[in-house]
Length: 341
Ligand code: TXA
Ligand code: MG
Image 1 (cartoon, protein in one colour):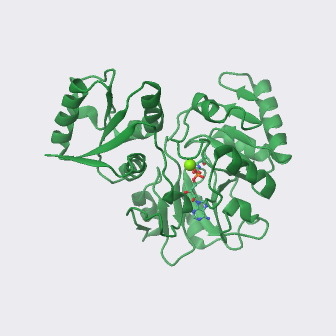
Image 2 (tube, helix red, strand yellow):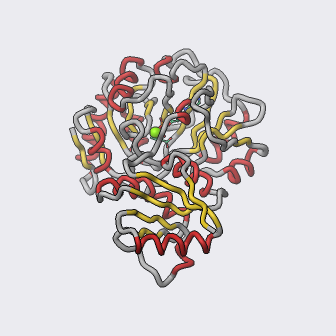
């Protein structure tokens, strides 16, 4: 069932949320919007329901899911809430921050993919919160894409990936971050960011002091801490390349390439340096990192629709949101770089 709630009245909205909640409570799966990307949810405490998510996405069973909650009362889910977690919840929830803690015994191993820890977050999106409440309070949800594809940030993309594979898809498009939540593990001595996101290292460190992040490429043989990090992610069919070098060189190289090679899509970030040039058929210019983050997954997907066989993306400094942006595009590029001088 598709429930496009964009522009519908309150009564229809409530009715749709109620039926979606019923589906979750009776062991089914529902796709829904969050403030980061769309998610595909099931009752986190029902192992059989959670298995359906893995099946619908084609997701490897060793990749754990995040549990989404609608308030800060998470004592059912975790055997201990460290002080650092309390501080983080206080400062950043609801919002795009997933906190890894020790799991309690009510959470089935299907949800955590066998791990003794669990990732929990409270999304800052009314529709998500309403659904979580209606669905019993604990929804396990990965991003609502077929495994390996860029995460969907619109109802349309969600439908394109999941129609016919899930009981219900709720559409309510709103301003999204466009990148998945920051993941921080607080079970060790020093809190460690496992996936950068819109809650930046700088923001985290202001609240809790030392934060570790190791952005090196994961070797597929390694046992990564966030098991999802070892899989190819965010990849369109087109071949993606990150262009690195001095900003002015990157810019002139890519502007040039856009003209010479109409079969390649060119994505330029920090376009304020090029006031006079406008986005064209194959040239996409974002004014700043926020704008680029919001649109990057949708842009990569559109590259396939439009038949581009190559995509070139300008590198940005890896600070603030730029760290999360580069983390995702490097993966979509399979770590393919082109240095211009
Ligand atoms: O913004 C988001 O986080 C979105 C929306 C839907 O909430 N969700 C999302 O889920 O991105 P997913 O499944 O696509 O990515 C979850 C990541 C995976 O890399 C997974 O390995 C990691 O979180 N993860 C989940 N539980 C974990 C745990 N207990 N320990 C380490 N990593 C964990
Ligand atoms: Mg995902």
